[in-house]
Image 1 (tube, rainbow, N blue to C red):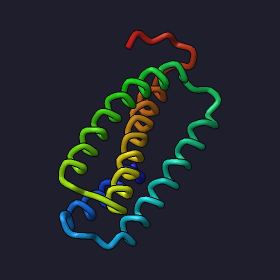
Image 2: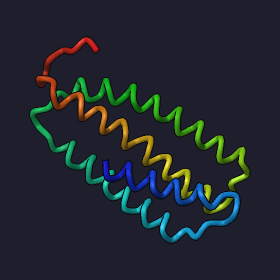
Image 3: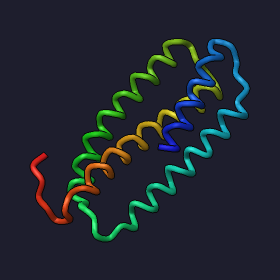
Image 4: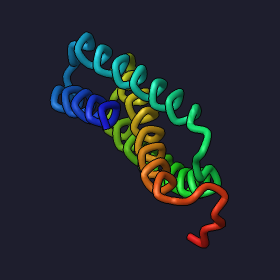
Length: 122
């Protein structure tokens, strides 16, 4: 949740300055913190031994597909709005963290309540 919150705050901060140039310091700091939290989340989840990995990957895969499409549409809006240069790079990286953090959260939330090895029909 922390990574998602930081990315949303950074995205709103940058979008509020458009179409003018925004100071990138706060946005890059929020992006770095969100990226670090996302990497920590992946590391912690990957160390779980007794876990319903089949449900995790099934839910995570479909959620990832959906959020890649959503992030792609948002990226298209920013490009169509003539966002260029370093602001576009930071927004793109924020959308990448957004598109990875939410499926990870959803997949973990579903898989943690499944029995390991249980063949779910979801």
